[in-house]
Image (cartoon, rainbow, N blue to C red; front, side, top):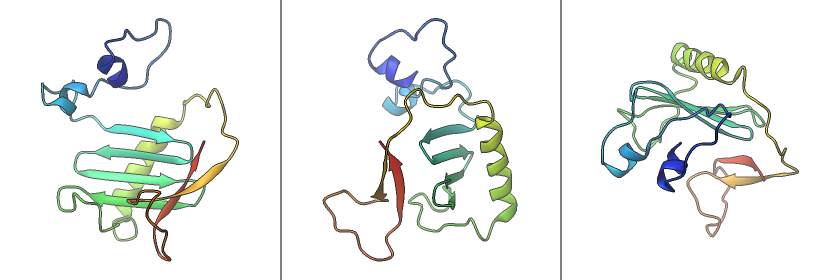
Length: 136
């Protein structure tokens, strides 16, 4: 819905769209409906949910989990996944429920490449850098 609104295009008829228009919030021209509702996104092995001030990210291929309190850590520097098991569990359950009935991709990926987190591809990878596998 956000991309359709940005391109002034109508949503396709007869297709269930799992999303909402965030353009008013992104452009500062207003707010979207249900701003307090959890926000989900995913790409390949990577899934995330933001619920209030909390953000959970999961990479199933690597078994990695990141949990951040965005109110106290807006730059996502301190991963609280190990120290906040109850919050992590609640958000993992929310994420699992959201994806339970998800359709499989129309076009499965053929390969996945490691992509550094918070670095451009022009910056060298250094030991200890975080990365995720991103499917094509």
